[in-house]
Image 1 (tube, one colour):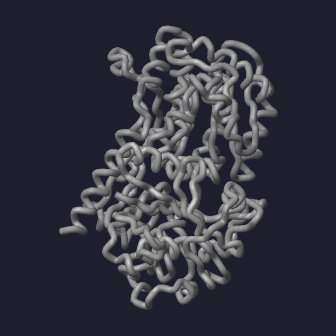
Image 2 (tube, helix red, strand yellow):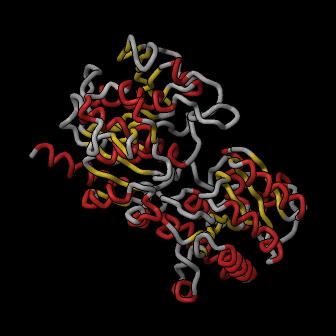
Image 3 (cartoon, one colour):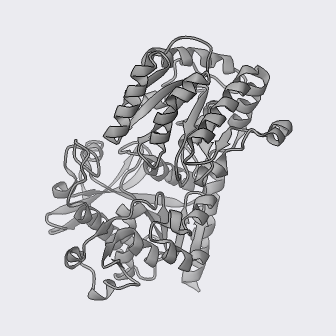
Amino acid sequence: MEVLSVASEIFPLIKTGGLADVAGALPVAMAGKGIGMRSLIPGYPSVMSAFKKKKAVLQYAQLQGGKASVHAVNIAGLDLFVLDAPHLFDRAGGPYGDQTGHDWPDNWRRFAALSQVGGDIAGGAIPGYLPDIVHAHDWQAAMTLAYARYGKAVTTPTVMTIHNLAFQGRYPAAIFGQLGLPGQAMALDGVEYYGGVGYLKAGLQAAWAITTVSPTYAQEIRSPEFGMGLDGLINMRSVDLHGIVNGIDTDIWNPATDKHLVSNYTAKTLKARAANKRAVEERFGLDSDDSPIICIVSRLTWQKGMDILASAAAGIVAAGARLAILGSGDAGLEGALLAAAARHRGRVGVVVGYDEGLSHLLQGGCEAIVIPSRFEPCGLTQLYGLRYGCVPLVARTGGLADTIIDANEAAMAAGVATGFQFAPDDGDALLHAVSRMVAAHRDKAVWTSIQQQGMKADVSWDRSAEKYVEIYRRLLSKRIA
């Protein structure tokens, strides 16, 4: 079976969040199941510089305003189709915006181009390659399924994965004439969405199957609160909706071999984590003592509950814990967290930015990681925490609720607890969870049990990949029938 995956980012070439980790890990997991997966990604500068031989397998004299070509390459063990369209992707800044954080005004054009190429490849535009399944990720790739539906790949089964429903790719109706779709597509059962064009909506409408990245989130998005205006469509497609928890790459995230750590360790050698803790203290300007360090590795946004964290910082310090915060995002939230660090010198440290290596060190050196998200489709940092013995404190929502077993009395008695849950959007509940964590940390036997239980959890892609394979096979059987 051959699967074409279409995504706007992929680890290790380009990453802004969990989407890249999933897009990079899933092909590796699929290979272990006998599934060939090739990923179509944009030719950002970091991607184009990763390979030298530029032999095009598909060329466009005109693609959304300029010449473009597609290159078939293997980078970092990933089979890729790279869309080289300099007028769209050869820019300084991030994949979606400039260096000041503002979105590119032509993102609608950039990701329409990516999707159009995805639809063309699905229809056999590249000699010798015809995928059995097309799998699109998030709004940037969602229009691939519309181009397939209204093009030559109308009979090709398609899967749409929602990583975060809050980001939908909504644009004015005026752009429709430049998308290259037939007029019939501008309809309620096509790409039309509240009078404009909805990229994610189009993908959800066209997909043969819809997946999201945890069972709880799959149910949450059927409600008005979490459905973000799409709950009606999602409920209409509920029979085709599947919640599959993400996995992580357990080779990259392995405390026994991780080169980003000062000291490697296993569940049996947890004392070796102490050297990593000292390194975290030094990097974040924290006092050196035995109190637990709680880390945050996150985008600093409202969705992630970073305003709740900022307002709770004093309470966390008063409870006997320290904070090490790594992230960037909303300028106001960055300022609030930096102000907390200034008020609590030695107890709160902040590094603004994105640093992959430092994120590994935090997982390997801190006692706990807190994720106070208001909603969280899956979350990956709590899975990294489990793997590294960095005990997760998580809001009871989405994939966080699905992956962490709360250390309540029954779970502790049964020896199955892996972390601490609290009510989302509630600072008092967060502080109560921190107090529970600090109390558990004082009892070395209890704390070690929680750490080791978490490190035993299966956070790999194996079971999740098998569920995707089941969906692929089911769709193929429908096509053949």
